[in-house]
Amino acid sequence: MERSAFGVCSYLGDKMGLASARVRMYFIYLSFATLGSPIIIYLFIAFWLNVKRYIKNSRNLRWE
Figure 1 (tube, rainbow, N blue to C red):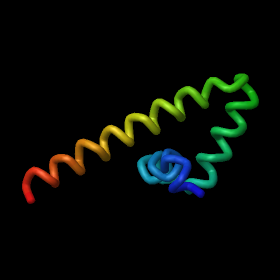
Figure 2: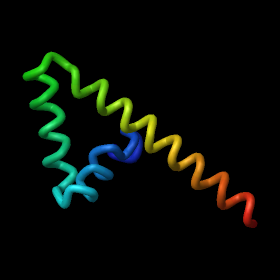
Figure 3: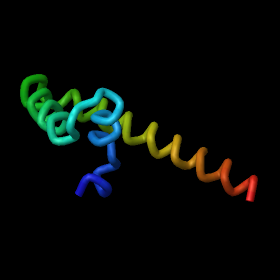
Figure 4: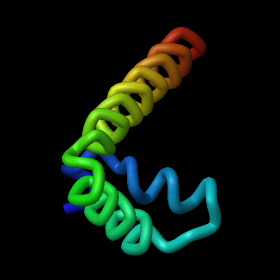
């Protein structure tokens, strides 16, 4: 499920040293408390990770 959900929680969990399940819970609780504004942050991070992955893959294709 996490792979199809952009991998944002696992990426943030790895960077902060937390379990990805805990990061997911924080997103859920913050979404309820702030009426959905963390969803915008989540989508922005997902977009950034996708761009980062695209650049990394295109850089690898040039050298092969």
